[in-house]
Image (tube, rainbow over all chains, first blue to last red; front, side, top):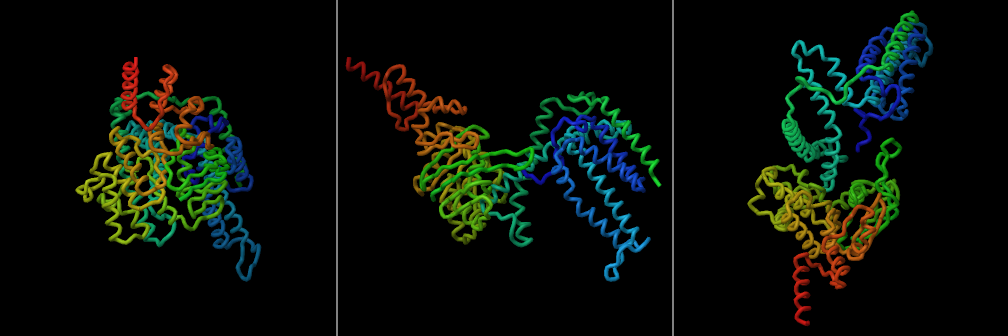
Length: 265
Length: 290
């Protein structure tokens, strides 16, 4: 019930972005992250921003949710902007504040880097906002498929990921329950010295570990009871499939790349 | 301590797609020293209500008064610590909160947090263990070596050792075997009678509500659906069925007897077995008269 958790905070929906194949989304985001670094003119940045913001808008995820995902990185974005503003000493002096000079290049570079950051975070958080964790792990398993040839345990890795994702909410709930129970017994998690607060965590962590191990054991037993024996010859409940929508996305993305290289200076 | 809820609402995750109204304009009061059972279907707001009783959550709207303490929407209460010492909460599956190396240390954890001095703490540990019928030889064992039922008793002792004036119980017998369930409920009833503890029991067992409570509160969709003495409540079979609740077996039995044979037997806390005997005697007595 903790409302500050955005990691894996999937917002259900039926939009274009939601219905894309998760493999397509991951691949496109991967390439988007690469091409962001090729932009170097106002026009090229504009194109990238148009793509990212357009994607966010068409996902129909409410704006406050998207902003919440960006919250932890706002500081980083502003910090890099200021750092460039202060450190870069090229180009014309735009403003002189008691001997502290702001250079044109500094402003431009600061803005560019911050924009890059913003776009990267926006696009990646869009993935988790519109794709269920299970879809993401399925997609990763498929995308890493070729590594099976060199005996890399792709299936096991994907299973581990989906199990951990599956248990994040459970453990969060458990944490909340135990912390409430201990708060009722007079533990104060919020005030007191640093040492006191560290000590207050023990009554929370011990029961949490105990129950996590118990759960893991039960899960392993339940899986064995139902005949689980690894990924060999295993079929899937949800088959991933590339649809027309995905081809539209590819076409759009290729247009974006062409546009980007045309507008580069 | 008297407890009063005044137009209390509670909303989970307000202003988000996951917004959920758990309590809706809830008003009721509980007299000091009474034994109240709160029943209702899953999701009716019982657990949320219970968390208001020692300030684990704050009302989104309205006001909760517990003795001299007040929880008001939007106002931070500075006496939460005192309130939590006076109101002991036994959560569902309380054995999940055990963490200390020994049983005695775990029971002592609560009172120590509230600044009770060592000598007193040790005395309370002994008392609490005795109240829950924990053998003294268990006090130096690790709580994780005990059986499920014993762990439950340790956890309950941990709450009792705080010497609360109000005891809040959230399905304290869930998952225990029938004899364990009876023992635990009898123990709470004894504490209620001996120490005049105001007891609030959240339960799914209509039988427990009937046998122990002197007042029943039925919740539905975060609102008070029915309220009153157990016998009045359990007369309303249809109203109960509308919110997926059953009538206790004994009451059901008595009303069938009345319906089919026209004999009215007053309910005085008899069990089914005792009633059967009573009936048998009546039948025999009836024959003697003929």
